[in-house]
Image 1: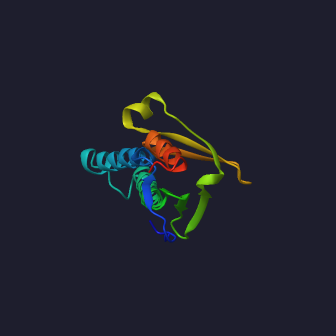
Image 2: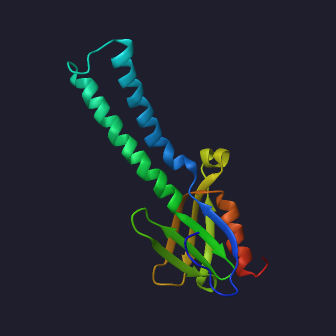
Length: 158
């Protein structure tokens, strides 16, 4: 975690979004690379004569850059639970930090779709007494563990 903990503060859980957030862009890149391969090597289309190949190469390059960015965004977006607060750190080109003290949290709930149950991801909703109101954490890895950890930390059982 990129945020320093305070005195007498211990890290209880560190979590991030599930790897499923990378799948749509990865599949798009894979499909575009398959098209490039098919037209260059299987159908022996000359890259100079086919505008479709050039467009597909451009799309592949753009999707590759998007995947590169999304991967580092996924690595940088961290949710941490300590014995005193919840910390959200995110940002690829800049570092952003948002924190909520545990004593200001009113309710924590989670929900999972069928695919989320199978692959162990879901959404966690944290309702706080602060001005921001509700923090919705989408596609988090193991949402039940995050919800349980927050509740246990509030009850000082961890």
